[in-house]
Image (cartoon, rainbow, N blue to C red; front, side, top):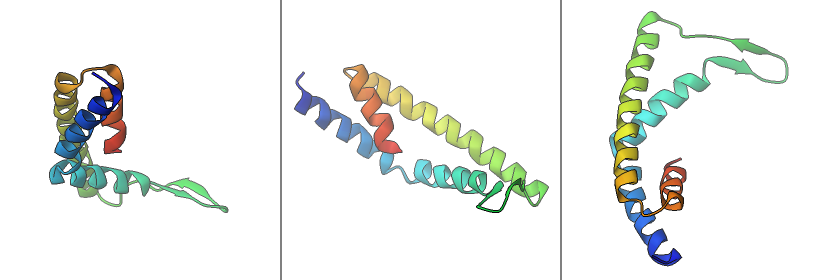
Length: 95
């Protein structure tokens, strides 16, 4: 398969998961709270942590759900990737 066909197939796989609202929402539900765990500016670097046990519990649940969904996406990409390059392109396009 030539490069153009490979890129078309990668784009098709990307659309399947980039447009997956649940996966995208989970990514943000995990990354925003994770990023807010530290104060990092010119004056200070400190670990803030979660404000409540409920926030921490919700973060863990979202992280587990995101992991499961990403694992399924990777299975799909592996099954449909015709090369290692296509697989890597699919992963990079999600980010």
